[in-house]
Image (cartoon, rainbow, N blue to C red; front, side, top):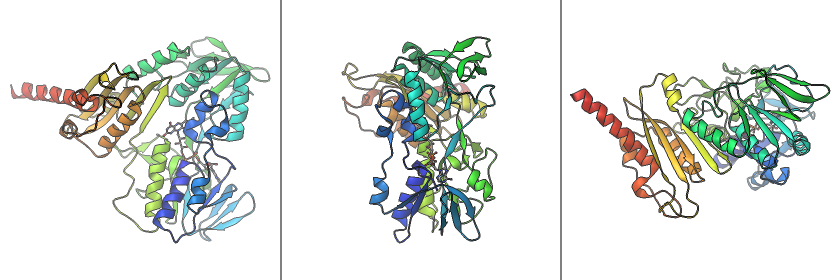
Length: 447
Ligand SMILES: Cc1cc2nc3c(=O)[nH]c(=O)nc-3n(C[C@H](O)[C@H](O)[C@H](O)COP(=O)(O)OP(=O)(O)OC[C@H]3O[C@@H](n4cnc5c(N)ncnc54)[C@H](O)[C@@H]3O)c2cc1C
């Protein structure tokens, strides 16, 4: 149930692992968008249709698609009822119902002109029309969706203000020095940023006309776009009395099985566990959703013990007018909060060699290691386009518990037109920088 990234990958993986089974996707909407591409329909892309997910992959893999909404599950009869009056039987049921935007209890939130980033093509078509008519836009929330929306709307010359309750944009995902670089870039393209600030009230007659901030300032606006996060859509599961976790996600084990043996849950609707602490995690990402879907599809009828979900690392990148920021695992702030004893390594270099190559950008890598075990806990990067894949390399190292010594001895491929120089490869040199600090500590200890 669900035709987003998690539903598609769960169906495809099941088909490949169990070719004798019939696989069906039940999807609420005729057309779905690539969710991560949504900010770009407001700037870079001409049309919403450019961001649509094609159903070709389902046809090619002999996966049946039914456009209808699941309304209830009968666990005893093993059937799903739909809004269109169907009753569909199953052997195994995978819930991939995704997430919905969070609606905060702000006065005026129900006024016309207040929008959410809903993954619904008709809703977004209406929002795109309103954006085109607007001159002034207030974005509430300075996470990566708020930052991407702001950057895209500036491409259409809209006056954009971002309101963020925390001390910086991208707070939590990055350490303060990286957040500052992101804010500077957004300011450079003309985005007005209000951090440490809350929206107290949205005011207007028939529609939103202004917002009142906790700083007592008011901003005139034509529309308000809420980007304050999403929560699991676990309604169907709750109705079927499946267990939920403390954040409202569907409770699953390492094989994505729910509290009922024939029902699995994957993606944003399922509960996440943190890779490091095994406590619940609030990170909702398409990359995590598809990884979970692969685990579900592989283990659906037969457990393949080594292929299990080890928890959410939280690896993602964002791009603000050419500036790429990426993060994987623990930041220094998170390591501190979590009570880890850690050591940091950093390196700044150019991402081509020589650094005067035409499309070269400066790249900065920061790594956080456990001081005790010297295992990599996380990394952050800022740079040009190359940074988007280097953060995946860092994520891979986190997932495989690589140590300072492993990274110091890493064998990599480099090329003048494509990568940083082998002599100053930032992932390796940042690890060496941390190694030097550890050696110094050891020398002091010896003395
Ligand atoms: C603007 C934006 C940008 C993002 N950018 C990134 C990014 O760059 N990188 C990244 O990793 N993540 C990003 N994300 C997060 C990512 O989009 C989600 O993590 C991802 O969509 C989760 O996939 P999913 O399949 O679990 O759920 P969804 O994509 O929410 O899909 C759920 C599906 O279930 C269907 N459905 C729900 N209920 C029913 C029902 N009862 N019956 C039938 N069908 C039903 C819906 O119609 C939908 O098709 C972004 C999110 C947004 C909103």
